[in-house]
Length: 580
Figure 1 (cartoon, rainbow, N blue to C red):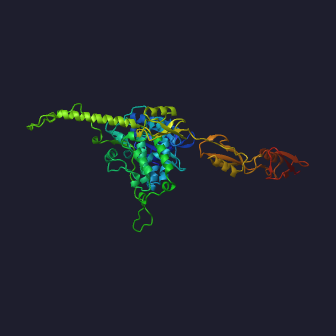
Figure 2 (figure 1 turned 180 degrees about the vertical axis):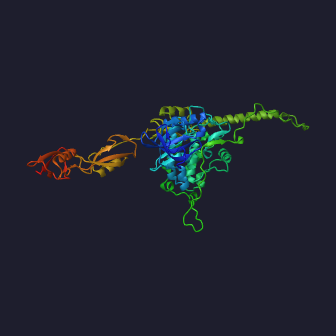
Figure 3 (figure 1 turned 90 degrees about the vertical axis):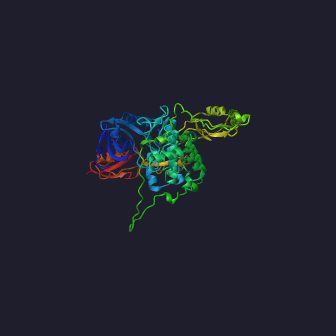
């Protein structure tokens, strides 16, 4: 960002100072700024000035702020404030220092399976929290996945968010028939066809995201947006292992399920997809998780004649969220109200037929229809006697899920797992998933939430630092920042206290700050001071001064205990003051 940017240094709403441009999108620009009231860095998302006069876009922008403000999740970029002044409609968000996933893929190409899942799982956790709150992101892509300097993954930019309880038309407000908002490489087929959509459009985009991380490229590419849309509609996403042989069948199956062109064949929401990903991870050996992707999937440096410095090939152009024109031939045909008259039949003379059914083709047709109906009915009856479709039980408790399954002639095998996003006692996922045909004799595996896992902080007060660290690790916590202070009761090098205090429930892996004793207070050196200054220094250090000397009006010539000797607070320190 150059200093000639007209918004550089502008103070929005009398509070937020614009400092540096971070990114430019199809509807808004993001700046790094400062909240002058709280003196903290923030990200400021400003709607493009050309859209401010559009009531629909302004309403969508404000809807995004309100929707994301409802989410309290560590993997979602928090919205702090929203406002407007004569220069901009804006929202203030949590500033996330680091890079986005697109930057990582541009630098590294494909990722290892472990690295890809380390990114995907928190993305699905964030989307799952949104889905369970009734929100759909609708613009999941690498540019909207932020990775902090410490490795924390956060999902940003809910600019196309939609509330599931609202209108379910895929034609968003602000667009006309034949138009839609989004990023073409990540659009689900039903979005392109402008059919009703739900949270499964995010599942589809997450599947594309996983394919891209595993292979280093997008599954559908073309010279223009129309070609990519056609491929979304008519071609399945290929298995990642075709490009990256180290990827096993478990992840091929997950990509295939998430990117199924029929939304009913996809996992119901991001929570169900996350459960499938976690099951796959547990089944994979370390060698497969950490296998390096093919070198061909990484950017290859080029060296010019006589050049010693490698130059990376130019990065592909960024895909921004924008209004896309859907070619009419990709939209479902509109059926006419009445069919045209059938063409006139041939008037050639018919050959004479023998008496019987041959002279009455309608009879044969009727017989064939009856036979087909009987066979179909028998097949359908037998099929329904043996098979059933797994119903959705997500969010139900155990009793409700059992009743729902029983209504389909199925029975559940229940197990439990901790979850940060699903309330205790509710269903996280089923295996097989929703909509899958299964034998009625086979149990449906139902995973119930035990709620967030919490562990207690052990009492390590008075224990040596090394022992305290081991105790925290044994409780599946980690030692955080370590501070020091003097103590009259705790030996030097031992723990005085923890933050949070002992007994508090924390998520596994949370850091616990430790305060370690520096030992008893040290007696300050007051020799050479005047009597009053020496007395004050001792009192400030927590000691009681006692003055000795014939006529103590001069300087301090001695003290007991000696300077820098450990002493208990409140104890007496005798100072000897000279006559002169």
